Image 1: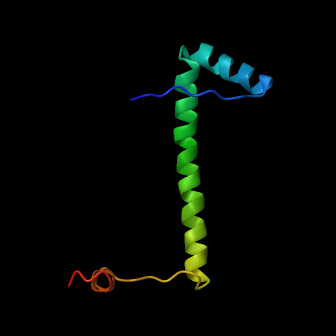
Image 2 (image 1 turned 30 degrees about the vertical axis):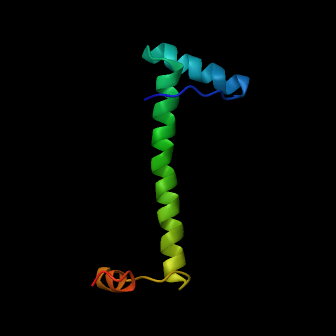
Length: 75
């Protein structure tokens, strides 16, 4: 299900968006959805890198599946 949203965008960016949409014969919505989806991949990588750095720095604890089950009382 799609939901409508309102956004404010710099006029130059909007002009670029319209140019791409026209060139590709797609809607603004399509281009924005694809851009956001692609950027989510980038954000996932950034989060993964941050978590890896925290793990290496000893700021995060790691538990095996067995340890987690035991902590949750599932054994």
